[in-house]
Image (cartoon, rainbow, N blue to C red):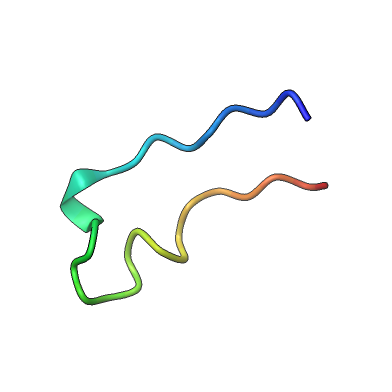
Amino acid sequence: MGVGLNTPDPHTCYGGGAAGYTDYPTHAA
């Protein structure tokens, strides 16, 4: 698709909340 991946934010990885799981930008298919 020619789309890059979102840059992960280590401060939100496995933090127990929604941040880092549902707030990343999306790409239209």
